[in-house]
Image (cartoon, rainbow, N blue to C red; front, side, top):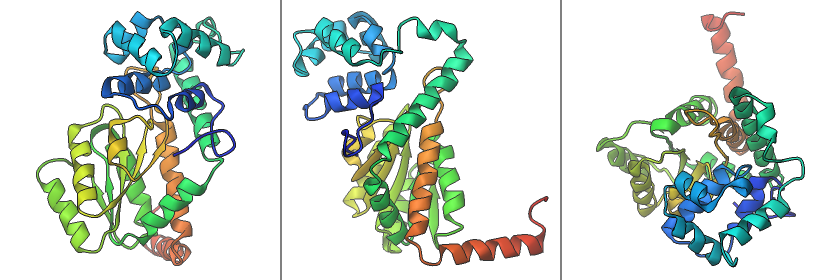
Length: 287
């Protein structure tokens, strides 16, 4: 998803990093560094090359080569550039004013702001909504950390879409279920992909595309491993301030995609009203 200013670029630290990396042919190691920098966008201008290398799980010389690949003389020049474009109110000492729990919440607020900036251009989401609405059935994939995102989407999507098939368990049956969906008429697949990325998800997306499905993916970054196997990837950053990643932005993006899909389904409102009527008769919910 292009997010350049004027056609959707975010003015957040993560958005400026995304713009900096665009147009460069990066090696897998360099994409790993870029991915790490986007996830830690607020901290990167204050990290040494050694610290960044440790966070990304690469060697320090790899960080130097990465900076050169972006057109800088070395990592110090890249870091100076990042400090120049960083918002004035973001300083190294800012985080000390909040405890770790507050920092995690503030980080998620920043992720949601970034998502709001991306959605300034609604075209990618509208395109995704059309693809998902037209696919009968609609397979929804999400394994491990992303399984709850896939399950949540599938739960609500089933209220307006006639045939949603949740794929939240791996194993040898996964490709069988892709084949079954294609035979039944599926034309698209929605994938939720969050770190750490299971190899099985990447392999499944590769298989799905080879089978003729158009892959729409929600991932934490345009540099995620699933990007190469997605026809349309819309990024939504995850929070990394706690022991386990937080995924408020991917969850909200899933609901936005639901809205876009429902807008393309002419009988969506009638289906919702039918469900509400039956829920009342069954006494399904406590008022």
